[in-house]
Each structure stands twice: as C-alpha cells, then as structure tokens.
Length: 445
Figure: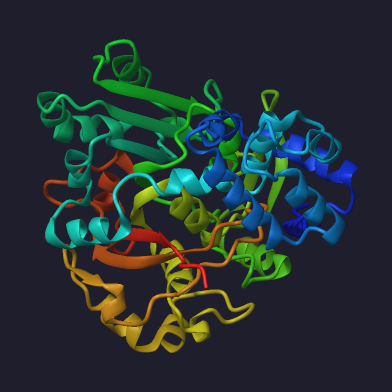
C-alpha cells in the first residue's frame, strides 16, 4: 500500500551552548571538505585581518545566544591568529586558532560567499545572454570555463557540447571543466537507456585530452552534492535537462503531502516499494500494467529545491526540455505575484489560465523557437525563499535577475541531449519549455 510523502524535517536550531556549537562546527567541516580546504586562503597572513572582520560581523548578526556571540567575538580579537584568545577559541570550537578560524569560515558560510563572488558578474552574464543566440557560447568568453550537468543520463549532451565547443576552446588554450552527476546507480537493472553510455564514458574519461577535465558521478542525489569535494563550488554554466517528473512537478511549500499523494495516485496509479531481483524498486500500477522504476522515482523535491541548487552552483543556469507539468510549477516560483502560488491547488491544465492569467495567455502563444523575457510579462521574484527539502545554515539570499523562456526542445546551434530529441516522437506531449536564468545575490540591507 502506498503512503503519502513524509513531512520534511525542520531546520536545526541554533546551538545553545559550547558543546552544541563544537558539534555543529565539526559537522559542517566534515560535510564540506572542499570548503574546509578552500578556507586555507582566508587565513593567509595577507587576508586574515579582512577575514576576521567579516567573521565578527557575521557572528554579531547570527542567531547565536549572546554568551556564544560575545565569546566568539572576543576570541577573534585582535586581528591575527597568533594574537587571538587561544583559550576561549579552543573552549568554544575545540580547535587551535588557525583551524578554529577556518572552521568558523565554513560554518558561517564565508567560504561559500567567497566562491560565489568569482567568475563573470551577473550583469555581464545577462548582457551576454541577451546578445547571443546560444547561452552556451558563454563558455568561450570566460577564462576558466566550467559546466555542471545535473541528471546527465546517457551523456549524449556532454558529447554534443564537446562537438560544438571543444575545438574552439582547445584553439584558445583554455581548459574546460565538465562535470556530470546522475542519480541512477551504475550497474542497476532499473533506468534502462538513461544510464551513462559505457562507450561515451570511456571516450570522455580515458581518451580525453589534457585540456578537458571531465568527471562523472553515478548514484548521486543532486540535492546532496556537499559530500563530493571534487565538484567546484560554482560553475560558469549549470544545466538540468528534462527536470524529472514527479520529482520537480510538485512544490512542497505549496502542496500538502496528502494532496501530492492523492494526485500522484490518480494520475500515475497506485504505487509501492518492491524488490526486483534483490534490488529495491518502485512499482506503479499504470493503466493495468505494473511498471518498475528506481525506488526514489516518486521522492518529491519540488522546483524550489532545484532553483536553490541552481543559484548557488551556476553563474548561468539552463533548464531544458521541461515538460508542461514541471514548467508551470517552476514558473510559479520565479514570479513575484503570490497569487500564482495558491495553496493546495494542483496545476492541472484546466486551472492554469485562471491562476496565471495574462502570463499563461502570453506564454502559451509562443510558437516553437520563439523566446521572451519573463520580466516583460510579469515582475520577477525579488527574493528566492529556501525550499523545505534543501535547508542550510546561514543561507545566502538569492534571486534571478533575468529569466528567458523559449518554446521547444532542440534549437539550432545549441547542444541537446537524447531526451530533448525524443520530444518530437512524443505525440501526446505538448512542446516543452526552455529556461535561461541568471542568478544574483540579494544585496544586503
């Protein structure tokens, strides 16, 4: 018997005493080895004074109890690791001065903030996208081009991307970092053609030239990237092709678990967890036929989780081959008007015109190949809230300064994956959507 999705866990409370603070600092340090390593440069003699000033400011505005706040601020003065109050820092963090400062930089997100400030500025990315047909051309115009593909599947997009851009990158002497992740476990009997193609993977790894740094991670949940230290903190371009349904087709901040479960059962069929030749799987009874999928197929993350991941990892975010169901749920999170985010109303085709009004009318009139700027149709959301399924301590506030909508799956001069190319054979599907998004940090008040 299928059960409604469980309610997400609440965000952990701020530490109330030194023991809790030490534990949480250690957890954040262990959870993000890349950030811990990156924090070394923040404690270098040339940057230490600036780092301590930023740390003190962050601590003073944190939700820590007054005793912990005051203790940390006192322990971090004066501005040198040798001159800090070693005893107090050790008591509060469990670490010697230099390591304590590094750990606090990780815990209070200074490392993440540092990473997001590198690369092309948001206004430069926006200007570039507006002036060029293919947003992927940005890879040719930055010093250190990099791309992260979420849900990479059979790696056909990676192959097309390299066919399009790698010769020009090689000629310019630039090194391309190309990273791909997919949740399908390599070797699983589930997932079929969506697994990484072995021959493509061999060509991309063993036969790759020195100017291509390619890595693929299988069996990885895109919402849990912090455990993979070889991933970059931020990429020139982040892509997600054909964002999965129902994973991103329901927003948990808008729809209750019971509503999601009811609609899933009505539209997809009753579902349950089973074993398929010793492997955990999801069985769905659809139109009288038992279909099997990976066990996580109906785990609901919601578009906010995807958008929150995108703004933190990409200077430019491209979501392609988006089906109708997922698109309108994503769109609702991009616009300022809260009336387009009604509580507990599933976005079925019959309610879309009423909920989205002129926005639905304008976008639905786009023909395949046409594009428009969303801000020309309706104001963009000024602050992207955290999702209920992807919470983090001391989050940096983001928004999208630019959103372009295109209609269609495949566009001339742009690389595409196999899923996008399959849309032309899907007679029951309406033309998919394509989003080009430029994130930026929300200025501090």
